[in-house]
Image (cartoon, rainbow, N blue to C red; front, side, top):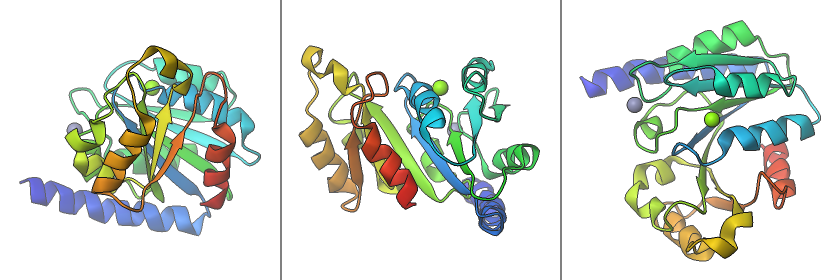
Length: 206
Ligand code: MG
Ligand code: ZN
């Protein structure tokens, strides 16, 4: 059954990818545990990028994060998954058609906070970004290797809290590269803005 579900998802993801390419839209899939700071990072990022932006907000319930994003002025669609614990390609397909992003847009997909099954569901995005924060364990990449193996970029958020927590950025990066040697790791703070220039440069390079 799982193989069937994933095969169906992959077919829709391929359609999404073709749709995005035809429209010259860059889609980034942001994944993390709950509370890593994805929405805060997006609030800050949306106001800094030069071109058109849009957001697909995935949460099990509520439109709280979409309301936060809407206040930045960016177009946003909230997708509630109910009992579901990840976004899939068909949910993203409907969200994309209602957003109708103009050519040259960057669409951020904020996945449901979960480091397990979002790794298995291709949404048709160009890149997968994993956000972890220094309030989590340094060993997260070893505990959730599928997520880190699937990722293109790892953001280590909340570095402003490093003096108060037991988190080793270099060791975490080493763990992440042990499951995926090609990973780019960017330490930053969405609150203070430290490291954000490297994030914007990474987006521009995609
Ligand atoms: Mg959020
Ligand atoms: Zn799930």
